[in-house]
Length: 569
Ligand code: ADP
Ligand code: MG
Image 1 (cartoon, rainbow, N blue to C red):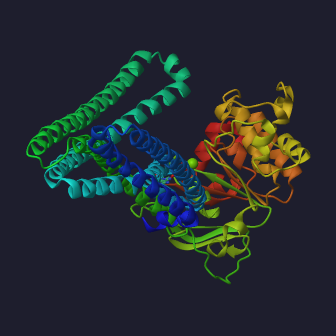
Image 2: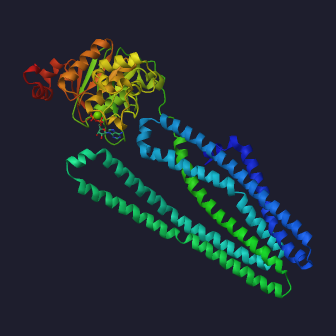
Image 3: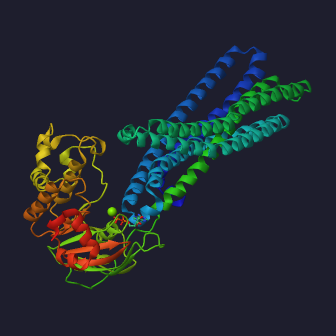
């Protein structure tokens, strides 16, 4: 809560002024019933029209001023809470960006998204309501009770009891209702997710003719959303009627008890009217307080979730290490595990010199992407040393690593933007560089045929392109900044053999000094490599060049013969 509260500090002056204005308004509001009682009890019996007009005029001015003050203060409160939550969201976003991949895994992307959206919203609500009512409501309740106690203790006691009852009833009802609303929100999220999945998988659903099953799945989710909403509604249904009930009961009690007191000659009739006004005022303020308490409890829970991110230790430390190696890329007895349970990479050992090509071959889940992620220092090795550019990767900061690599990962997404922007990728590259990269990536031909060439807008996820076209754009993106090391993780899976071969040739021709790391299912894409790693279950079971592996690795030879027949040797 501390950290989030700190965001209010720059606005302390405004908040203080706003609260002072609210304070003034509350005093004005509290004075109104007093004047009313005076008119009824003193001026009306005396028939003093002049005084009645004057007092009425003063009341009108007070009421108007109170409204004006409240509007001004509410606007200030809205501005402050908007502004501070904007700051908070900014910091949260940049902190999220700087989380390491391991931290991302731990928090999960969807939870990060909901912290950025839902939780900042609840914090906003909390600060907004606190500024609007945090002073005003308790002041009206307290001030109202004190004023009425001074005038007529018995009647004031009646009010106090009704108020306390109202507060706890509403508080209890709302507290019970909130978890149901949270569940309902989650259920709606599921429905939304399903709609998105179905929309993006619509072709598969149609092709496999499983629309019926899909509809049934949706209906189940929809029904569950309805059910939780209904439960939430059922609990909350009590809130407003109960409030009305307490208000009416209170009013009746004030009139009845007041009538007795007037009969006994202990109070004037006009005071009953004043009490009725006070009661309505106090009752409303009590309700406001109960609601503020609910907002606070929600807001604090959200603030804690936000602080978890803000206070998360800065992702990766940069170790000092003077160790050097002749390897441009390499590993020395490297082991790594995502969750500390199973080793996703065990005792990996290889070296690659500048300008050489590394090929990685292995079935899905064998640790190919993991190995590459360690080279990019997306994760840190648990044991051993990862070499990048002749230095220990753990001694390289993100700035050192940035710009060194060009990467295409599996299942990478395109932006809903122009072809140019997808290749330049927010780096502001020149159109010449982008065009050159597109040519090397074998993408220029089809880009030219698009309606607006480089300026053609892509649909979300590049849905208006074929799989192979998307892959070539991603490769162009990786090449565009002329990286020293190019990593292609299964980037040729959707390319035909001829295009893949042309691509590899073009990369060699246009980027002569580049160090290449290629993950591929295809022996043809790997056979030029200076070193090929054969991975199985996180273990490098064989390594060497094509000729060497053909002779020594049965598994490799069988795959090569299967794919290339006689051309393998
Ligand atoms: P490949 O790229 O060879 O298909 P990966 O390197 O992606 O394989 O995955 C290797 C193993 O690590 C798999 O068993 C996979 O389930 C696991 N794995 C991959 N990414 C993560 C992650 N972020 N958290 C936990 N386990 C992971
Ligand atoms: Mg992979």
